[in-house]
Amino acid sequence: MSTGIVTGAANGIGAACARAFAGAGWDLVLVDRDEGQLVQAASACGAGVEILAGDVTDRSVNAAAVTRAEDRFGGVDAVVANAGVNLARSIDDTGDEDIERLFAVNVRAVIYLAQAAHRALSRTAGSLVIMASKTGLVAQRDSPIYCATKGAAIQLARALALDWAPEGIRVNAVCPGIVDTPMLESFFDQLPDPERARAESATAQPLGRLARPEECAAAALFLVSEGASFITGVALPVDGGFTAE
Ligand code: NAD
Image (cartoon, rainbow, N blue to C red; front, side, top):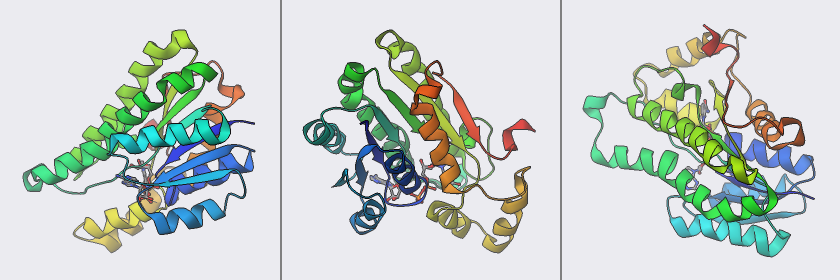
């Protein structure tokens, strides 16, 4: 039996990761600040699930997730650093609070989780997946701070892949394109013409539709699986061909 930790597991891609991992027989510690939705997401996963309500920008929440996995399930085989926030705003209109919030959740919290889980992953020769974004590979208009955080997340994955390879720990990033989740709705709502953005986004990806959260979860599950045993340091687009253009 394998044990995983998924952050941002209450909604969207994180909740889909929880369902996918649970369906593959994993025990899980699910972390999110949205306790109500987290309880609901956990109930879709069956037994072998622990929930931890908290903010991942708090270092102690990440440490507690690892401790919970070790105490309840005996170790950590995989970590999915998925919690994230977006911001559709020009650089001129972005204040200190927004800059701090985006880097805190999308970068600093991922570093905290990696630090907290390093020893546990070393013991199991486990795997870390960072849910980055295609916006870390190619830029997107109107979201400079978000793009910067996702670029940082991808480089963090690559750098840790090098540093942790001698311990047998693999580290990879998943780079979703436009995915049908609550985050996408909040992104549209921040734009001047949400209806137009909604309509255009469906056709922006060569496969001609939005991604489903389950398609990103499947990539994460693959990357932590034995089938990916020689894959480390990659940034895997799940974007319907967007970054191929
Ligand atoms: P979502 O908003 O639907 O879900 C994100 C979850 O993270 C929420 O449950 C939220 O409560 C949680 N979260 C946010 N900040 C937190 C914090 N500080 N502490 C604890 N939990 C916190 O988002 P999603 O679309 O499922 O995105 C998941 C990941 O995928 C994010 O990192 C996002 O940047 C990335 N991503 C999403 C898309 C997309 O189109 N939806 C595209 C590319 C990348």
